[in-house]
Every structure is written in C-alpha cells, then in structure tokens.
Amino acid sequence: MFLARAFPNPALWHRLAGIRLGALVIETAFRDDEHALAAISQHLCPSQLKLELAQLKESADVFITHIKPGEVEAVMTEIGAQSSRHRIRALSTGQMIRIGQ
Image (cartoon, rainbow, N blue to C red; front, side, top):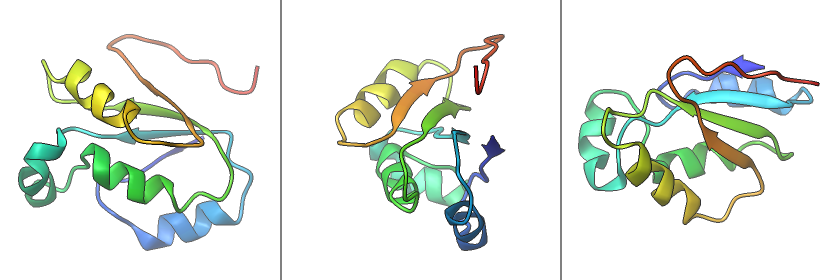
C-alpha cells in the first residue's frame, strides 16, 4: 500500500507503474467546483483524481481520505459518476482497513 501525495507527482506514478499495487490511499479534499481552491492548496478534486488514477495500469482498491468536513457525500458522488476500473471507497474517521486478506 502507498499513501499518495496530495498534489500531482510524476515520480510517484512512475514508481507505482513498476510494481503490482493492491491498494492506494489518496486524498481528495474538494468538489470539482472548488478546483481552483484545490489547486492552490495542493489538494485533489474528483476530476484531478481521475487523471491521477488513469496513470495506474492495473485496477486497485483506492481509499479516499482527507475529504473536507461536510463534503463526503458530494465528493464521493462526483467520484462515483466517473467511470473507473478501480474500486474506490471513502475512508471514515477511525475506520480500519485490512489489505491483502
């Protein structure tokens, strides 16, 4: 599992392309209509997340973290409206995940 950086990082995606990735934890803090704020604060929004995940060659379990309080449903709805080969879910406070079992 890797914890991805909050802002596009070509070196990360290059490294991930060379390994078999089972799971990825990545932040997506803002809705798409807050794209400018996301860029200024070096966070992702759903459309940017889609571009980032497109760089992964194989499907993976993707866990979304760091969603702005009160925006979980809106952000996850925008993510869900995009086609993706990945299995994308939001993490919640205190949630524990088991990977590889």
